[in-house]
Image (cartoon, rainbow, N blue to C red):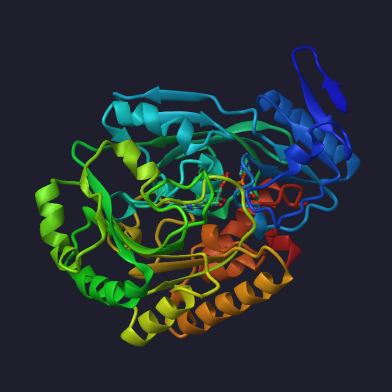
Length: 451
Ligand SMILES: Cc1cc2nc3c(=O)[nH]c(=O)nc-3n(C[C@H](O)[C@H](O)[C@H](O)COP(=O)(O)OP(=O)(O)OC[C@H]3O[C@@H](n4cnc5c(N)ncnc54)[C@H](O)[C@@H]3O)c2cc1C
């Protein structure tokens, strides 16, 4: 282990085999095997600058990570220093201004409970275990997005150490080009040290789920897709088909069961939510948990896995799901299928609205987002998962109108996520701030001159 001494602080830098090395390179997906040359564990912006200087001096590129939740979409980190910011989790909340400032590795779980106590919520996603930085810079979508837009649009400032080692603040008034690029272009422009964003008031929330046996998945999905055009932006519903493992970390009521679940979050009264959802209630769910909730309930509504696991996934944005697609998807995710989870989210509404002053990722197309996930435990189940995901891709390919980068969990050419003008502008900003391509995000934006 090396410590880089300066007058005020010293950044810890690990080499392979040092104590804590495997923990520091671990990710949420147990199939990832990141093998950087060095790992820096900075505690503050000054130590981040030290780490960047060491990487530059050693001829290594720099990859920043707070939680490793988005690591599957990047390379193995050969020739790189991993700047693991996990020690930088400070949080400041100004409830009156509805403004939050957090360190680079703060997770949603570090802010959501305190916000909820004050009747507020951040625009987080399905899991509070996710890091705010990577989530926000990739777009950031969750239960409140149909009403309030992408989290990237709620970001008001990002502080970062640039490839040159300078600590800068990017906002609407300072380095506006960088601020634009960071909101969608991700971790390609420097190592983020802090992020500031707005949160929203949630004076009234109804949330919960209708649970059905998995063999009713196609029937439930058909009924749900027909209802979508009647739902206001205040109501967000997802259908998830989940095969819950029989493990102790899974809640008792669903442990070991295979279920089709309609999940709902309504910014309004329970009576109105039930009126809107009546045709699904009429399908007689075996369990119904819909009711008044505090905003914190949105952090567990989706019942995402809470511990790292091995998984492969696929995703697409579509305008609609014809019955033939619904039948195929229900079969792929149903009993005996290879997918452990199929999550089908109603999007639309504010997903499609670009606010003034927005960044590179302000909107997403489509009315429905599909995300399928399989858990390979050995070679045989790995082959079955691959077939299941290929099957899902075959169903979705003719319907797809785009992809959501944060859900694309394998390395791809990132130009496919942007229109030509946005991609060219991202590459120009990269050429200004990091022409030598020192700092690379999980979805890589090369500098314009690198053609
Ligand atoms: C269980 C689970 C549930 C999820 N649910 C949702 C959801 O509902 N909605 C949604 O939008 N997304 C969701 N995601 C996807 C998530 O938004 C992405 O995986 C995101 O990249 C995670 O960001 P992170 O900071 O936690 O991860 P990390 O792996 O730490 O970071 C991801 C990337 O962000 C960049 N980055 C992170 N920190 C820095 C930094 N300090 N400086 C520069 N760049 C940095 C880098 O490019 C890095 O590779 C989910 C993921 C999981 C695993």
